[in-house]
Every structure is written in C-alpha cells, then in structure tokens.
Image (tube, rainbow, N blue to C red; front, side, top):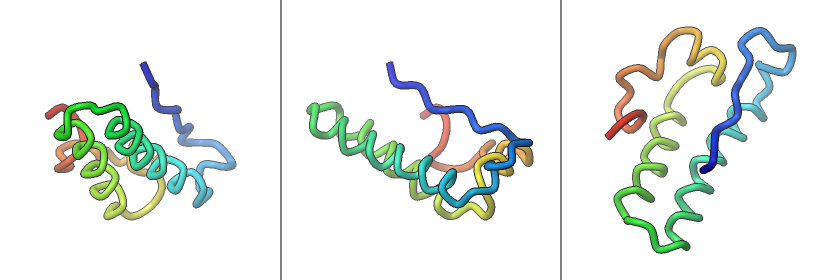
Length: 79
C-alpha cells in the first residue's frame, strides 16, 4: 500500500512551498490513479475532498501537524 511521506517539523526545508504543493499533488494524483483503476468512486472523491480541505489551511504541513489543525478537519481522516 502507498504510504504518505513524513514531514519533519524542525527541518530547514519544512517551510518550502514545495512541501505543501507536493502533499496536495499526492492527494490529487491518488484520486486520479484510483479512478483509473476503477476503484469505488466514493474513495476517489475522498482523496479529492481531502486535497480541497488541505488547500484551505494556512501554512505548511509541518505547521498543520504541530498545531493539530488536521484534527476534526472535514474531508480528512477516517470516513
């Protein structure tokens, strides 16, 4: 199974806009690949919804994790 990369909070590259863009790209790409494989449409849509929810957050992924911003975010987590 695919595993998301970890994002170190205290890394010199943690504030890179590419970190945010890479994570969002992963979610969009996963939705696309699942759709191409003929997976359940709800699962494909879940990845797209998660990407859209994350796009609305301010800051970068390490900040989201440190602040706990992902907890309770609609479209992210168990469904």
